Length: 72
Image (cartoon, rainbow, N blue to C red; front, top):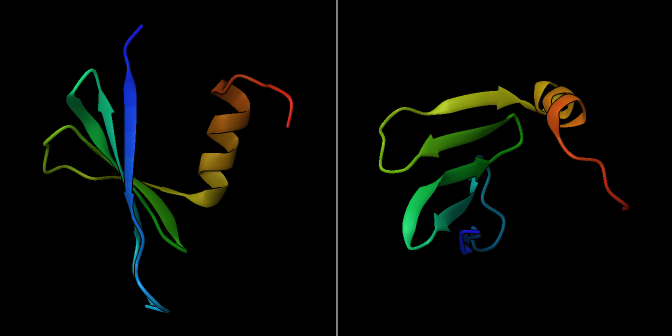
C-alpha cells in the first residue's frame, strides 16, 4: 500500500476569495493538488496544468454515491 503525505497552505488572516490548498503525495510522487473554496472544490492532478472543478452539491452527490461509508 502506498504511503500518503498531505501538506496544506492556509491563507493568513481573513482573505476573501482565497483557496485552502492541499498538496497530496503518494510514495514521494505528487498525486495532485486539492483547492477548496467557497464555491467549488478543484483538483489539479500531478504536475498537470488542467484543473477539474466541481460544485459542492455535485461533490456531495459523488461522495455519497461512490465513497465508502464509515462511522462519523
